Length: 140
Image (cartoon, rainbow, N blue to C red; front, side, top):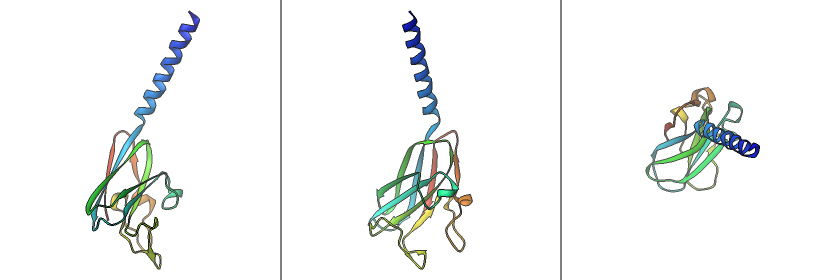
């Protein structure tokens, strides 16, 4: 009888933990628009803190470019603050091409944040995931 009670308690704990984990993770849909060609790929980086912004992604997705728009979905994203940076890798060399530190390939960030005399700031690009699925629309 004790073994049955223990098994039931263990199963309830496992079910509760799984249920809570599912409720605290969300999907993030990123709509990328104004894509001018179907050459190359769209590289999308999701950042989970200010210190890593534009340096080290939390998650990343690469998708084939398509003239017009494409959509990517980050799944199982926990609650928190995030920012997105993306670019159209027209030559598929896996890096954002620049000239004198100025991007020569189309790029964008969450909230369509723009930098002044440099890259966009975390404060302008950040958004929160707290209680629902989020959609970010970013124009290249």
